Image 1 (cartoon, rainbow, N blue to C red):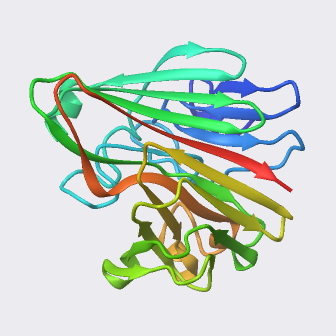
Image 2 (image 1 turned 45 degrees about the horizontal axis):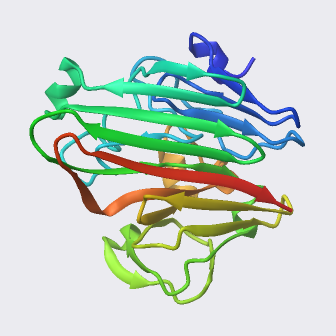
Length: 276
């Protein structure tokens, strides 16, 4: 039994005839595990992650809305990642979950909205977030699909496809810089928002001899993060031994907030696939 199964009413299971398997929790509408047809872990889930009511699960694909990180007055990464979503549709390889504003959520963020998350599995994994403004006033928001990708060794991992793109370096206090080379490798804490990033980037995992392709639609930006040893050691649900095992490469609306008018709908999607 997985960690997810131990703390939930039961994860939503998606699978394929080829042997791929995805686990989705109602808690946060969070994809927590994806094993490919060969049995390999595509997503990282911390063995020290907390589960249960109010928990922020460390790993998988947390849903960030309506605030990215600490970019505003709300709790870090917003209010939906710890909420219990309703399962609207579940099939062999597709699940749809829905969340609407409530009195508790309005007490934290006073806007009417309805969010939907679609998870679709084939030989690739597509996660689509859509938001409708169900109120009478426009609102601004930031969002992300905060994907933790499993890698064999961060020291032997490179992200490709961001050469020439401007980014905010959060490690350096938000300095605006430009990615000078196509290949991004890791030797220290990395926390960057790439602005108006290409819709496709590649994560070459040399230790596992595979490439993970991350494709986005509707999200203008891309975020790349690894805490490295010191920050990981200070993070209770990680630990110093965990930082080499993942890199976050995520589709995001983080550089500039999106504005949603009453009755309008916004949608962003992210697809993850593997090549060898």
